[in-house]
Image (cartoon, rainbow, N blue to C red; front, side, top):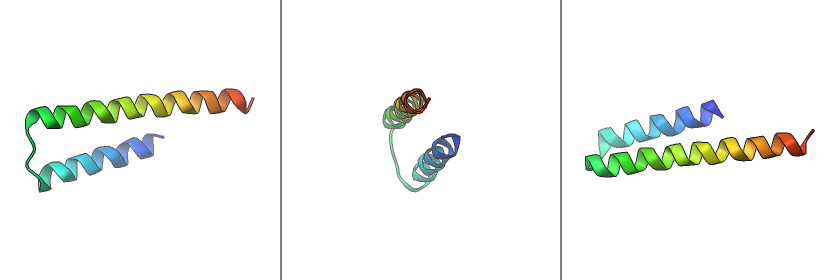
Length: 52
């Protein structure tokens, strides 16, 4: 899970270097990444509960 988040963060950093985006767009991207991370954690929790 942490590895996936790190890859996404790295991709966002690379995109920042190669594209011109506004600060607002950058903040929206980071918010989306955080929301996805929360959803992944929730899914992992459900999977762990099912597998018990």
